[in-house]
Length: 228
Image 1 (cartoon, one colour):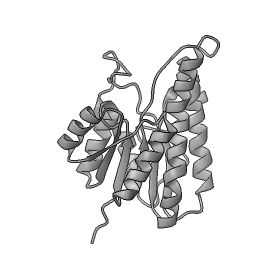
Image 2: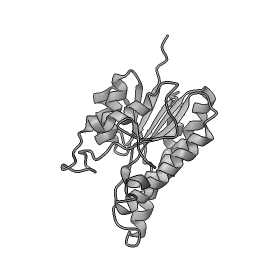
Image 3: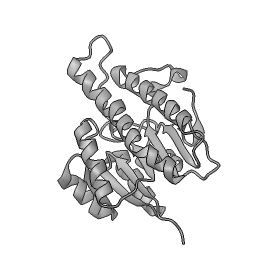
Image 4: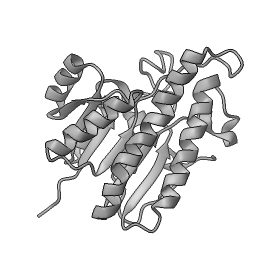
């Protein structure tokens, strides 16, 4: 009998997160959306045939509550897509302290706490896929970091990806990668972005469903490695 894997997608109520959730559902995964707005998130979950759990990745207490609620409901997370993010492009010398904290709480510390909470279980069970949704703005090989504070936060997320992948490299079939979806037409990317949702989501879905011989510890766009 085929095993049904469960994927948790943060920021799953809109944009790339919603597109990824729909694609994973279509591939036969059970999908859980991490959402900040229970009304919007619940409606999207109903449309996708998914479950929605309150999750503000910028709030450690919210992360703890979500992880506890999943466990209480008997839901084991096999695939984690750290998609939720904010974009504040003020430069490092001009960014307000409040915005600096919000950026790193959402883009780095939240994913880190979810990794810490969920990856040990993946290692214990012998299966896991983690996708940290990043950006070329955090790649030194693509003239980064750009986009100010946002780019610096993605540098940190990329470093976290490599560090966790290295820590679990001896585990059976646990893979941790970072994927840049490119510049996508979303609320964050704007209407002028050249990529549609399906194109941006494709590489994330690919990394979330890698076969046992797939890569780990990489940075990818369009299923191909890009420079760190």
